[in-house]
Length: 113
Length: 114
Image 1 (tube, helix red, strand yellow):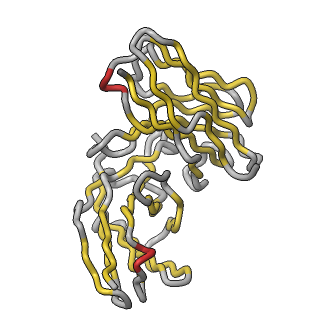
Image 2: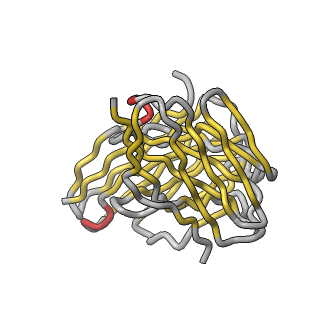
């Protein structure tokens, strides 16, 4: 069973702070890692992808990957109330059907003014 | 139209009805996916098509029947559903089924089975 674990939250941070979202995965051969943002009643929106160990920055978002620890995280700097949403971690597998995305249940983020 | 579109956005159907969900992608992608999102559960992959050929059927009951007539269109035919099938059904597409390609989702169809 390929599992992706996320703290369900809610994670509450004040406006302007850094929000840190974490994800662990069980399949050591996983190759690709994605973060999606999902507003209530909406579909998931891709915000970051990361494929190699280290950090990847895109605007206020930084994804961090540590394959040895099977850990991927998302940092949101200068958090805004509009960042309040559920953040989904998704991981591809290592088998022939590696394209299949395994999702975590998501972490609910609340940014308070 | 841009991105991935889905119709209808909302659907209420009885257990004896037959209905179809439609997905269209305007991204020039070659792979399309159906996912199910139920409350309190992670997104579940249902079907994967690559160049109109089904490459994954993730143990989905036969009351769900996918169809992919071309690389831009994907359908999910529904019949004799159960109340537990009520969920958000999401279509996604990617350049192809390589693990490095990102998947983009449509807005989803909120299905309620009565």
